[in-house]
Image (cartoon, rainbow over all chains, first blue to last red; front, side, top):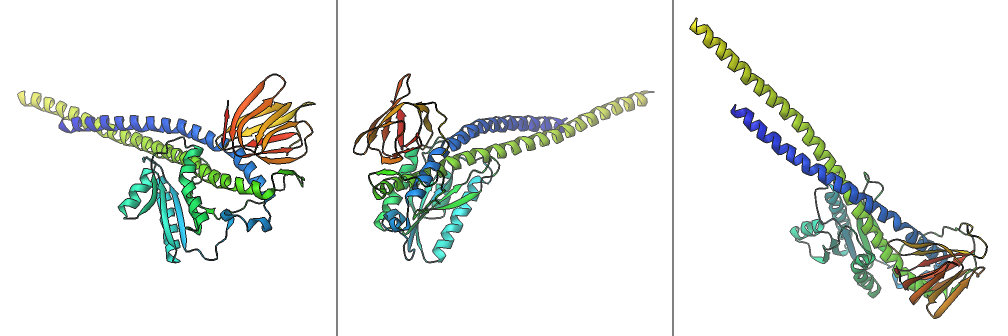
Amino acid sequence: MAKARELKGRIRSVQNTRKITRTMEMVATSKLKRAQDRVAAARPYAERLGEVIGRLLTPELAARYPLLRQPAAVRRAAVLLLTSNRGLSGAFNANLIREGRNLLRDLRGRGVEVELHVSGKKGISFFRYQGETLGNAVSDIGDRPSAEDAERLVNSLMDGFVAGDFDAVYVVYAKFNSALSTPPTTLQLLPVQAPEDTGRGGEVDYVLEPGADEILGRILPLYVRNGVYRALVETTAGFYGAQRTAMKNATDNAGDMLNALTRTYNRVRQAAITQEIAEIVGGAAALE
Amino acid sequence: MAAPAAGAGAMRVSVLSPEQTVYEGDATSVVAPAWNGQLGILRGHAPLMALLGEGVLRIENGRETLRFQVSGGFLQVVDNVITVLSERATAA
């Protein structure tokens, strides 16, 4: 019966694992729901902001803003990579890190000096291990990133761009298409890619208080910060989506394993019983 | 922009922050802390885009007066639809 006892132990251990992964799946599902709501709640602000900038911005004005400065040659760039603080999410962080490394390799291949900023423990520990010097490493952004978190990440980059320390700033994040599709994405943050004039509302002759250039000067930084905020929120939602999928797979696998183990256990148990009966019958026959 | 779904004398107001829609509803008058002083808006105001300073945004909807603390951002008026965008907008 030694084998049967061993199997029993393994069955119990797999059962416990399944209990844990199933709980994590449910937790991730509820956090995903909340994170998704935050992605949706961020949309009206971003849309309006893009609309207004698209409407006010004219090519003549564009040349006057430091945030829109198109450098002749990119010599120094900054990359902001968003990852999660926790794992157990399948290839989520690995995909983001790969996208980030590809971008770094691409930029460095073109002779661009790159400063890397990372948010999230997973990215930080990877690049530390690689011996990369990190410009800014933030690991205290929780599962409800705020606009202040985004500000903290991007303000130094914006200042650096305005001061001419960087000629381009990129952010690598997980775009949240759906809970199942969160492809790693690279977004050029600076110089600002002016949103298209959507033409909604037609040609309205606005009274501008103060002038268009002052308004733009004040709201362009808002637009950049909002870009990072949305990247943060989408990455968080993507993380929980990936975690839910990973935990669901783990629960399913544990179930399969449990079935196989139970079957083996029953077979062993039955074999033992059969053998015992055979022995008894054999013993009785020997006595006659 | 959609035509205002509000009744006569009313305007449509939405107050948006990066994180959420802080307020969405009707208003009979709005007083906003513009960059250079208080700015009052009633129905029929000309299309306007104004920078906001820091202060209290008051929305009067006929039943009550709502107050929001805003800091920076801007306000847009078009066809009796007012949109307030501010990085920090909280009910006060």
